[in-house]
Image (cartoon, rainbow, N blue to C red; front, side, top):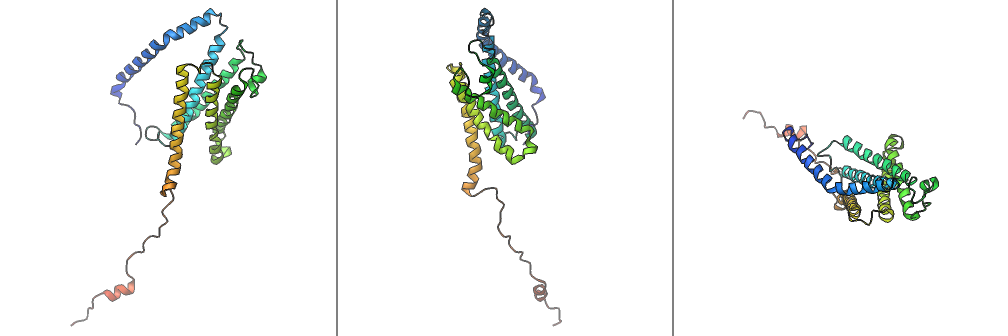
Length: 254
């Protein structure tokens, strides 16, 4: 079954529901956003890079999580019923590229932060950070792993399908690294919304990964794998020509 699109007669209702949802989100977040903007203006803009750095980091994490979840949904073929596979694969690739770009912006903005001085070396070399060197270093390694995975999308034909799949497993290490980096080194990890963001993202990835492994292992354990049926086909029961002649009734006259 393929997704054929939504009924055009419901477009006004759909747009109305979207407008209501956007209104609820704006109404719930606008006061906090305005207070944050007032704090930035009141501080003379000195903490603007800090806010932008945190925002870029959180968006990068969500984009990377979305890419991992989308990739697992592709591998389990759960999306095939509602979307074409080439389109789904493109979205999976684009989410990874967007997450990598936002992570790069997140790291670059650290160099503009006047609270803690980050040199070019500390931004590039893992575990050389003046702030939480271990956990920042884990995030830097995860960034390089993500860069390798994103680059593999464009070199897929050259490195081959098998090498591309093996390299793709590094995505799970990168996701684990950025999750640990965000919880241990992020300044927002102590808030309830950030904690639940990390918990729900991890639960989604672990659940889909476990389901994917179960899909691959269960047929082999049960003995009903995808191997072709090698049973010898039964021989036809047709009789040979001699037997057929012998079986014909005699035409001699009585």
